[in-house]
Image 1 (cartoon, chains in turn cyan, green):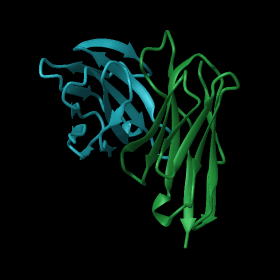
Image 2: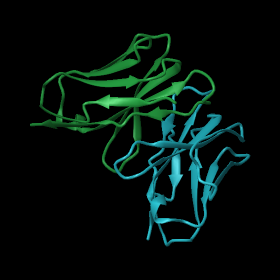
Image 3: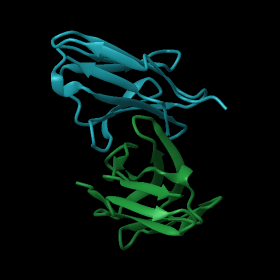
Length: 111
Length: 114
């Protein structure tokens, strides 16, 4: 069965650079979610999209933005990167708000 | 604000033992609760989803129960195996006002030894 795809899987950036993470949800899933998991921490909700419209927003810094495109894939854009942005970034998708399926994550390291 | 707590934080058991992981949440107005497994540095694998109207769900050697009124869920793992070693996370979805976002617990790190 198709799963959530995230790219890249690993990303190394320097402080103040910009990063773009991509997420391809499971086909026919209408909702995409982004979560951030810092080292030794539980995942924290960042933002979600339902049918290409932002549906909810969590503790997402103003330096971050996201969108969902017409083909339902989503991108998380992160600017002016800080050391504290180093984390695992997960994308998840669901159909009509039911069970969320998570991708393998993108490990971002900011040096 | 919903807070989710998991006890114990870490657990080490010998192979073959039955075990129970606990999850508690402060706001009982939930839509559903999910249990996940996470291997070190890896993604989250959904194990079980319990809707707020359900009392339990079973999948193979796993059984999850939900007592919404008391804000508790348990994950029962029967006949544990070394391959069960991982961190187990519970997460709740709010009934209203919070969209579909999940609030996660802090996890229980399980080690099953030979």
